[in-house]
Length: 165
Picture 1 (tube, one colour):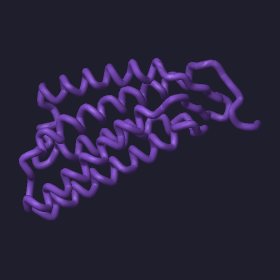
Picture 2 (cartoon, one colour; picture 1 turned 30 degrees about the vertical axis):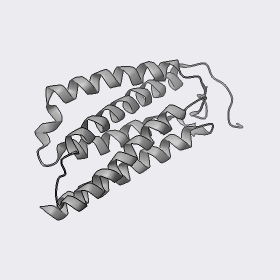
Picture 3 (cartoon, helix red, strand yellow; picture 1 turned 180 degrees about the vertical axis):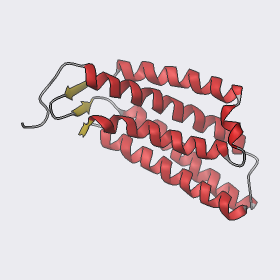
């Protein structure tokens, strides 16, 4: 059971790292439309992995879902307020001022690394895991709301040529 916990902790760190790299890639670069979804989906994977161990029913607890819905709405509002340019012919987009995604993903990665270290030192689940769960749920829901809103927004916004045709 213990090696399984550490394997999940490593997966959480890797998913959080991938979410951070996806968020960094969006900052002042032209990316494909589907790349808008990556930070949110990867962050959600990390959060579900942490909350779901050792019982997957933990994911559906009312308090966690309420917090997730609130953070999702805040993320969706942020995604809608962001300035972007969309090249619908080449299915590419460029974001302006996407630092919030980088900061939230970096916080999630930092907490995932600290959680892994504490689990190793404790030889199992550490006492701070519930706190980390709440923060990771909030970060993941924010990034997911932001990502989905941006993905919808790039598909419906005015067409601007970003890549040569």
